[in-house]
Image 1 (tube, rainbow, N blue to C red):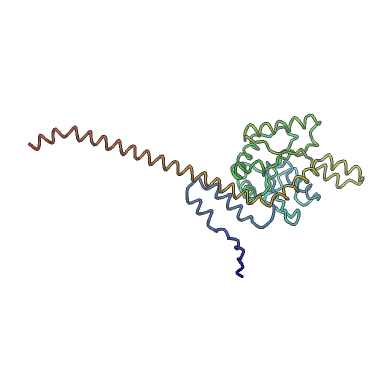
Image 2: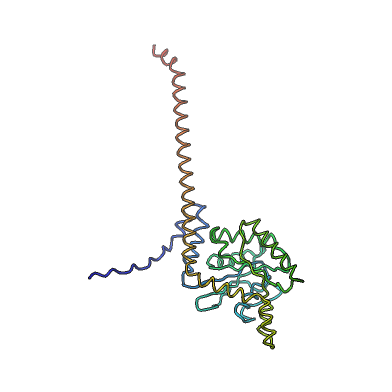
Length: 295
């Protein structure tokens, strides 16, 4: 009996992204995103942080790991390159440099890591109030990088330093302001968490077990970890979803191109018809003179 062989997995064309870029400038963004997706296909789920300089991105990842010194933290700018560690056997946590218009190289390094991320943790210092214009600009760029279809499901808004707000009312007001500004400027509502990585790490270091448990609960980190575990569990189809999104975007670009070409053809036919009509009119106008010359 003939046994059918399971088809082997087809390796992606290494030059696929370059071929797409050669089709025209409108293909550049989706080609870059597709390239990052294919390069990151190693079975790992990538969680990458993002945000301005010094809102507590590194402290957040240390809290997720339950260790205070894995990623360097400081009151001044500390992270200058992407650093990654394993969280679980199949989960990678990556710390990126804070965005700054004054340091373009760091922005480039951060964007490169974010293109291959399965989940992006956008970190905002909630103690400063609502999200600012520079942060909104970053989110707009992230939306372009990830694609509109995937943006809301792959980006979490983490309002850190909740313990630095003077009271619960201020914290809630600031969080609502962030949600409203993002909705107004990006047209989406991001899933958000108000957290304090510092309280969580203090809870781990606390000598009194009960006090430590209280601190960890108040930090909101345990709830975030539970949510991230769920995202990872459901993340096996994330790459396929991202690929489908990129392919749909390619189809839409090609559709727009075809419509433009069809419009140009119709316009060319119209102009050709107008030219023929003008030519006939010109011939009719000079015919009497031509006939006279013939005589």
